[in-house]
Figure 1 (cartoon, rainbow, N blue to C red):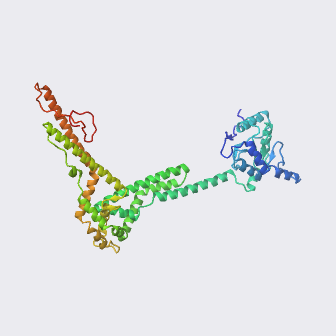
Figure 2: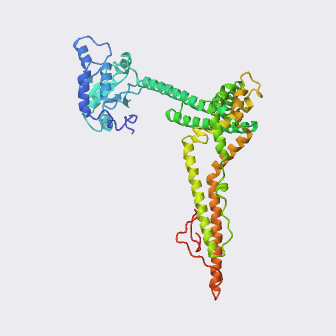
Figure 3: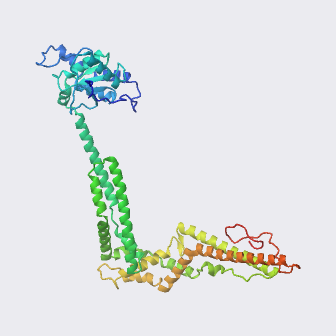
Length: 495
């Protein structure tokens, strides 16, 4: 036969330690009772001698303190949500906040029912008889809470409160029910989530600025280059926007899996290609309607003396091969030729080392803004502004706010096509310097390998010769310095 308490809901670990409640429960409860004075209002009502309405429960129940809604609320605030076990002596959707247990079957007075309730109380109090418990039911005419209190008294519990007014009295006192607090908390959470979404969506969907299109135009000397660079930038913007939106979606799903913002994000993702294309088109239209606003100032800021100095310096630029040449010598056939080849190899290595050191220093200086033509001046950027803005000067662009020819011609007079080619070669030399040096070292190392193979062959031939006259055997160097390479083993001779 099923127990009459089969429907009892029990929440375990009710009194786990929580921040702010390290003080023993009995001490916290004693302080709260002193501050809230539970039972004072009921005692005052009973002392007044006023007759009870028909059907109303008495003012007092033996073994429990009759507590008013105001006093109970005061107590809850001071001992925390786990300080008192709140028991609803009925099934209801109108729970008082903090209700942990529902006891829908309290009628009956058999020994079996008494034992069943004793076991139930022991489960949600841990068997501690001084555990504070508060019982309530529907209203002040409801006997279910009185019966529940009696069962607790019979089981030996000593810290009992009876909310005589029930949950209807709680509401009449202007206090919120649990579902109202939950709805308020849900509404606040939804509002916070929506605000978080709105801020995040604005950040993710922020379109390209006019300056961004102008920058792309400056990097595109031809219409073909502009189209290609735009396609690349548009695709990058699409990818970044969708990545941002997906991160935002994950964050919002953690906050509220049912948030309507999730569907809004999905819609934004679906619109990404169209929205990004439209944003770039709008930025382009604004720039091309008034190119002087975006290109005149950068052109006017270019220092012609610094540009001229950079061009003069670039005229002196040489590739690594032009500076150090190549190391390719005939195979030595005598000791003197071997010594000369070894000396040339050392000199060649020193040339490459010095060139690499200068290249590394140039990279470091460029990183801090020191570039050819003067500290902080970047000739490549100046040329990019010139070539990228050429299509917008008034001579070729039909717009009331076209780029003044004077501003463009001022720089173009110095950065002529021939001088631009010089700057581009110097830039190529700088860009390829490290790889060129490595290539030259590889070529020199290949010569060393060929020489060592040649020497090994001559030594083998000499060993087979009875007279030892099969060739020369060079004297090993006391300090053979290698061209930089990874070494395993090598034949005697140049390493």
